[in-house]
Length: 555
Image 1 (cartoon, one colour):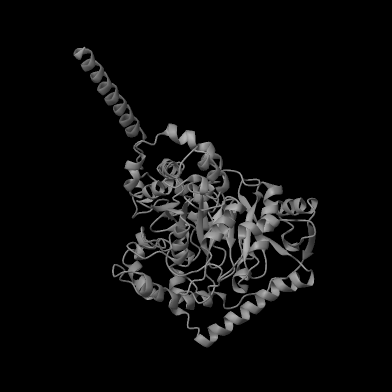
Image 2 (tube, rainbow, N blue to C red):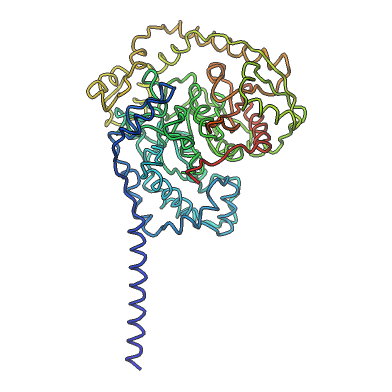
């Protein structure tokens, strides 16, 4: 009898060890390593593109080893296999937040599994040189542990329209305590900060900060005519709908790409003039540039305290509203910040199209994708009014950005950066970059040099700001008021400059694709603090158009 017990115990131990060995073998098989490659062929292919700005000098960063992005999370993936990834795919890929939350409530996946799914997917694609997008700069080393904590609650009490447990990516100019905030620049490579106000709001709502997305360096306010989506830290962000063929849009390039490729539930971008609208349109996602002041800017690397704003970038309107709800709140550190009682999730449910009046810009009717979208709106009951607002110039626009950045960047560094950052001014950064131009500024720093040269006075700048605000508001209001319009419809970021200086909100929604497969967005522009109306109309358009399609190689 004792011998039988011994044999039984031995078999148990043997089977247990065998099973453990099989798990370890699977874990070793799932280890994926990124290796650098000869980029010459890829770079030569971009020289054939008609758009000179797409003639790339490099693909991957010269200072970031991609393996370092996920190295601290490798152990968390030891027991997460391709099998697990495949099992979870139907519950995650292209799903909106309410659908994911519903699956979690039903026990089909957990917040931990959801987080691991995205980390695994990022590593899977970003380590493959034929598919990588260079869209991620860093991952939160504690995000899986944080997800486990959130899994301990009773899921029945979680609202489906909640950001709770949702892995979110932040553009890498938005402050995070757990990760560096670089703005894509080597000068800020070791920039340790506290959480930005909007980061704190997301964490208060129990969102998971998955990581930091690549961007156009210094929010595309560094070099003249350089590729959008390039940064010295992250390399060249690529468009999942056409790698090294279509632009990724800028400057929230990485935020657009990570959402489009399903590397996260949603992302946050920032815009001064077109930097949310452009990458959202180029990546066939929903992007909202809010009214200046609706979302706080404190803790975000600035271009212009006059025009900067963060905003949500998502695969759907409902996710956009959920993310916006999570970030609103009056910030005493931001003089433009306002409070609002609007619940954007509730407000978009009242989406009615009949009788809504859409201003259609005549000069854009040569665009077949735009015309197709207008026809859908018309057939569904929307009233189409063709408008001709003209195209007034915006003299002095660049000086707003130059002088604001000259003043706002040193203030940001003073308030947010630690002693590890030695640069204090734009002049310091120019000098720093000149120490190694090939690595730090392969496309030059012409805009930074222009900032230093701009001698606009305080009084002169004040007049420029006021004059442009009047011009831009007249540009929109002359049509909105005359024709009693609910919204003006544009394409991509075509009218982002006017919306910027007018301080008007704009929302872009996937509109379709060109014959070559390049995405385009239908952009809704309205008066200040009309985000609820824009989201209502965007939801309605989304429901009749259903134009977003997952990139072919990322399904």
